[in-house]
Every structure is written in structure tokens, then in C-alpha cells.
Length: 508
Image (cartoon, rainbow, N blue to C red; front, top):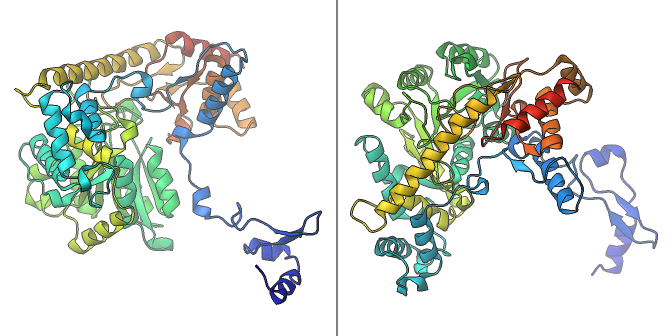
């Protein structure tokens, strides 16, 4: 409690002026009962200004309105629809994708080891669970792990990468388990960003882009350097675009990194091997750190398309590149045939990183203690799945194949349906889990949107939500060329919904 002297000092403080409030000093006010109260220390004016610059369209205003509509439907409010279809995010299980049996069996055994004594689980699932639990402190997935991740899991990830890349070596010490791929991406950006003014770090990102990148760069105060994908050529990367974007950026910042998403989000393209070679040579020539977001590497559908990892191509180009180009690549349990978004499992591998910087990376990841251990266990199952001859192998392969086949079917169906709607054109969905169609909006709708202070495709998506219950993300949330409008859909939606919404907007 305050002493008499202290309370006298407290009550003698005069209210602060406007300039003092702007400096973040607390102002005192007297309440009706004569007690002094203080303004909030943390206000919109005193908070970190970089946070206010962060935007994440995937869970932005459209989604907030969708949640309100869901509440209204539960309360009995009548709408032209009975449910909200959430196509705004690639949340596979929420959209009905079934989990892989083997994964859930092992996770159940790890979470409740008493089940190891039961006969209801196959022996290979029990063996995987025992191995994981043996590597956990106290034999429990509730214990912290090493900050870089459980050692045997990192070893399994390294073996998986070697198999995937045709024998290219992978050192487990260069593998970091992460809280989804997003955690690894943000961690690498933290290492890269420095400087002020013209020396401030610039990071090249594709447009359209996944908003994690722009949000992270805004929070870190880095310079976002846009390079545009070529929509006319199925969202391919254009070397001349990279060159012109980099030259322009060097006039006002210090570009240090180039980010690539392959297969693409939100655009669904799969980059060719030649494209990847060109990008690696470009990065080597311009001394850029490569960041390869490869979380959709199993999601390749189009005939003639194939996933090529940046690491594999890098090493196949020879020592001139494999000994020098710095690369971080990322993978996750959230996409592909797994769709286990909620477990937040992932990894990143770093190549050719300076030893002193890697020591700083290890320090940085130690601050967050460790990734979720159940997510690490799941990542281990993804990279060390049931093998031929093991009891679970046939069921696992059947489920994996069925899931990927269904995703491929949905990708084709999405393209076909969208291209039948007047005013909508959609490139082939070569991979990943999204379509990013171009929408031609009536001039009247564009003018009305601008009068409301909205991007025209935001206006379209909001009207679509209100009239049909379909929740999409406007292309403006991902970036797009001026004068073009798009939306991202995370699943194929019914033709009648898009047709209805389009006709509504035609006559606004």
C-alpha cells in the first residue's frame, strides 16, 4: 500500500497534455467517487506501429463477416442459404478430408501409452510409437524436446530428403523441426532483415503471394520487393521480371532474399525444372538467399508436371552452385495428402549457411523452447511411413492414393466449373490446393466498390458471401496486377453459387 508521503505525491500529479499523451505517458482521470484512474498504457497510438501494418487476408474481414453470419444462422436469422461454405483457407480436414489411419493410430499411442498394451493396434504402429516415446523426455510427448527438434525425427527427415532427391546427402544438423512451415519461414526472415533506409533488407516475393510473407515483412520492417507471375503463361516465373524487379529495388533498399512457392499458393502452378534452374542461376549471379516454400510437393495433378525440389536441382547443377548458393527449404504436415493443419508440424533444411549465422539460428529457435512434440511425431510419420511388408502398408497406400486422386479430381473440376461461368476465367490448377481465377466485373460494380472504399474483388467476395454463403478470399489480399481482379478458392464450389453471385453483381 502507498505511504502517506507516497499518496500525497500521487494525488499532486496534474493531468497530461496532448503532446504528453502522444508520447505514451499515462493520463490520470478522476472518477465519480473521487478515485483516480489511469488511461491504458498500451493504446492504438502507443503500440508497435509495425503490427498495425500487418495484414493477413486469409483470415481478414471476409472471414470475420462469415463468422458473424454463422452466428446469425444459429440464432435463427433467415438467409438465402443454410450454411457458410468456407473456401477461404486450405484446411483440408475441415472440408471433409479424412485423416490417414496409421498417423492417428501412432499419435493416439503416443498420447496415451497405455494403449500399447491393447491388441487393437497393428504392431508397426506400436513400434513407431515406442521409438518416438523413447526419444521423448520421461517417455512422454508432453515433455519439452531439444529446441532444434527430436534427434531421431531429424534423422528420419534427413533420410526422407535423401530418398526424395535421389541420394543427394542431407545432414540432420541442418534440419530444424518447426511449428508448421510458417514458423521456419518467419525465423529465416528474422535472420535476414537488418539495416535502415537504403540499406534496409529487401525480400523478393511473388505476386500473387501467400500473405504470410507480406505480413512477416511488415512486422519486421523489411522492404517487400514484388515480382509478378505471368498469368498468361499459367502463372509461370519470368526471368526478365525478376531482373527488372531487382534492379528497381536496388535503388531504394538492399535485396537479400528471393522467396519461391512451388507448387504455388494461391495460383496452383508447378514450376518447370528449367524455371528452377534459371532461378538458381539468377540467385547465384545476384547473390540472393533462396527460400523455397515446398509444402505442396505431393500435390501435383496436371499431366506433364512434376515436382522438382530446389535442393535437388541445385546439386545437379554442380559445385559452382551447390557449394555456394544459400538455400532454406520448407515442408509441413498441413498440406499434401496429410492435411493435418492443427498439429503444426514442419521442418526446414538450410544449405550453405555461414557457420556463425547457423549458431545464431540455433540460439533463435531456442527462445521458443521447441516445436509442439505431437507435431514433431506426426512429421516423423510423414517422412517414415509404413514400408512394404509392414502390417499398415497396404491400408496406408490405399488411403494416400485415394486422397491425392480426389484432390486431383477436385482440381480439374474446379477449373472446369469456373470456366463455364460468364466473366470468370481460370488457369489449369496444376498443383497445390487452390484456384485463383480472374473475374471480369461490370464497371458499375467497380465504381460502387470504390465509392465504398473497397477493392472491387473484395466487393465481389463480400456480396458472394452475403448472397450465397460462400467465403472466398479476394485477389487483392494476395496482390495482383493493377486493373485485374481475382479470388482464391480452397475447394471446388457449386456452379450455381458462382453463377448466382455473378448475375447479382452484373446488375448492381
